[in-house]
Structures are given as C-alpha cells and as structure tokens.
Image 1 (cartoon, rainbow, N blue to C red):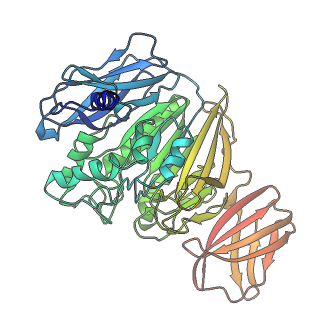
Image 2 (cartoon, helix red, strand yellow):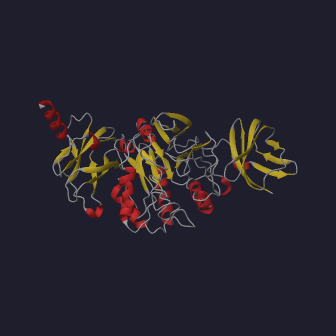
Image 3 (cartoon, rainbow, N blue to C red):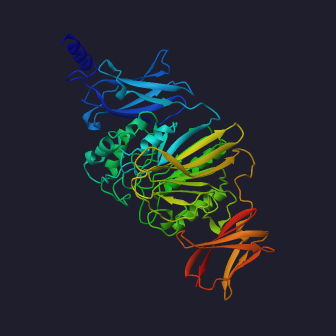
Length: 515
C-alpha cells in the first residue's frame, strides 16, 4: 500500500498542477546564426511567459527571452525571441509560465544555430500535407535537418472566412497537434510560405474574403522572418552562403498575374542582393515554374513569366536554384527546361527541384525534367519529401537534391532521384552555363518528317518529343552528322511540341508547332 501511494505521488508530481497555466502548442522559426523566434500558445490569457535556452549540454548560464503576456485578441499566442545566441551551436529550450519553469519533455524544444560565413548544412523541403500523423514526418526528422522548408499547403483545411478563428484553428488542430509532425517541429525550425489550401481554399487568390484573416492568423501563429506589409508573406533569409527568397503567390494573385508589381520588384532586389554579396540564391515558388499552359501555376501566365525570365537574364542573375511545390511529384531539372526568356537565350541555368507531396495522391502539372524524371506519389499512403544538402568548402558551394519516398505506411525511405551541381558565387565561373548555345538549334517539320539542326552536334544522341505539358510522346536514337539529324515521322500530332535533343557533350530543347 505504501509503495502504491508513493508511485501515485510521483506520477501526480509529474503532471501540471490543477489550474496551472501551461504552454499548449509551440514551434520555432526565423532561424539565424544568433537568434530564433518561437511562438507559444498558453492556456490562459494574461499569463506571463518567457522562454529559456541553453547551449547543450546546458553547463553554461542560459539565455532568456523577454516576458510576454499574450492576450485573447491574439489567441493567447506569445511571440518570443531569443537573441545573443552562439553561432554553430545546438540548443535546448523550455518555457517559464508565471514564474514556473516547465521541464517536461513534451514542452522541450531543440534547434541548432548555423555558423557564420561559409557553412555546410541540410534541410528538408516539401508541400501538400494531408496528415500530420503520417510516418513521413518521422522520416524527415530522421534526416536531422537544420530546418524544415514548407513550400505551401501545410494543411488542407481550406479556410476562407471573415471569422479569424476559422484561420487559426488549422494551425492548432492540423499542424501543432498531430504527431509525429510536432516531433519534427519541436526539433527543427520552420520556414514557410503558403499556397491555396492553407491560405483561403482551393485556387484562392487575392480576392478571397478571408485574405486579411489568413494574414492575421499567420502573423499570430507563425515564427517568421521580416514581412514587407500587413498581408503578403514574402520573406528572405541567409544561411551560410545561400540566400533564400520565398515568394507569396496567393495573397496578391489575380486572374491576370501571379504577383503584384511590388512583389516583382522585391524578388529582383533580393536576387540582386545575393549577387552583390556573393551568395547562391534559392528562390522558393509554391507553384511550378517550368510547366506549360497548365492552370494554377506559372504556365498560366506566360507573359509574366517571360518578363521575369528576361529580367533574370538582363540583370545577370547566375547563381540561382529553384524549389517548387504544389505538383505532387518528385522531379528535377538541371535548368535546361526552365529558360522562358525571349529567345530562350539566358546563358545561366537554374536547377529546379519539384518536391511534393508530403502525403497526398500523385498529380502531374506539366513541365519537362531531365534529371531523374517525374515521380508522382503513387497514392496517399506513401509520403514524399525533398532533401537539400549544401556542401560549402569556402570556394565552391555544391548542392545536392535528394528525392525521398516512404515505404507505404512505415517511416522507411528509398531514394527516388538525386542531382548535384556546384557554383562559385562571386567568381566568373561558367559552371552554371550550358555547354552549347541552344538558341542555334532548330527543328522543322516537312513532308519527310522532323529535320533537326544543331551546330556542333556530332556522334550518337537521342531525340525525345513531348506534348505541351511535358508528357513523353516518342523517343528515338539518332546519329548526328555535321550538326544534322532526321526523324522520319510524318504523323506528328498537331499543336505545340517540345523537342529534346542530346549528344555526348550536351543537351538542348526547342519548341515547335506541328500542323
């Protein structure tokens, strides 16, 4: 009896006292080498809360945030900030509520600050989360990422209301409650830009009635980097020698444009900042960039995409790669199929990583990818995510894209595709340019078939034909002679076609209209 009573007292001692104010939900973000932001929702309004962090193994004095008393008007969410952190250091953090420090494991978080200057690190990236209980979150956590980059559709609750509570609830119920999703979010800071399902519903744009409430709920719940105004969530940050630029393609999207003029200016200024400071730029676009004539992505605004591509070329933006969400597939392109400038004559190549869906059924939304193909989720049971590994030796920045898929409902993963490229930011390196000038390549249709001309091409190669959304129609081996090859096809389908040519020293793509 005595032993039973002792065990009961020990058990009760580990539980919060009845009526004691506690932290209910929390996560971190806006990571830098010396600071981090943390959002914590408490159980009662006006409770005094602060966060304490100690550098592991916690044998030195801790660092404390300021005390915040979150109000009901902000859903009792406290915006906490830790500053003065040591670069390149792992930390543990805990919360003090009304003077009582909570040492429970469920309310303990972790993060690592990146070092200053050139740094090697990795992060996981994905969009389209149907369930925070899916083991894919355990798989991502097992990769030990520096942070998690969400490229949209962090949940599928489709809020769109003049009641801000409708926009707050998904953060609590679909993001910050389910495990193992919360296990990742308690150990890896988040960087996040929304898409439609987590903004104001399927295909939503700047005309949505819930636009301002989506913006308010995001600012209350999300630990974010500096934002440009009261609604849009464009944001940027630098880790090591990589400058991340996240574009909001929902809050100002319209039938005629993906972004506002101010957003275009902001994006280009951020890319110029990266160029001026010898950084590799990472542009995060929630909607796919290199699709063709497809609804709900850049293909539906070809003029706007062309103008942006011309600006990238004319400003000399060279060291850039693109991460995209929305399409439920793992696909990689080395940049060959991502040039939409006038004349397709940008000498730089921008590798593209399409990384989705975290756990939704597969969907193909166009685009041609030449490194590892197109791998839609086979079903909603198998999760998918991307991993980006940055290896910086102080001279070159080498970046690897890894596409991972879970084994049905377990956390075991297999590598679906991978691609590595290197850049030397701030130098005159031409490593990011194509080995051949593809503007010289042509493809003409006559009564004998497809006549191909590509000055300098020689030896064996391949010809692939795709329709206007990137589906492979035909593949044929050819022998290039004096830059010429012929494909004896007279039954080409009418309409736009993509012709992909290769030989031993390069690859190129041209577009034709078959009639």
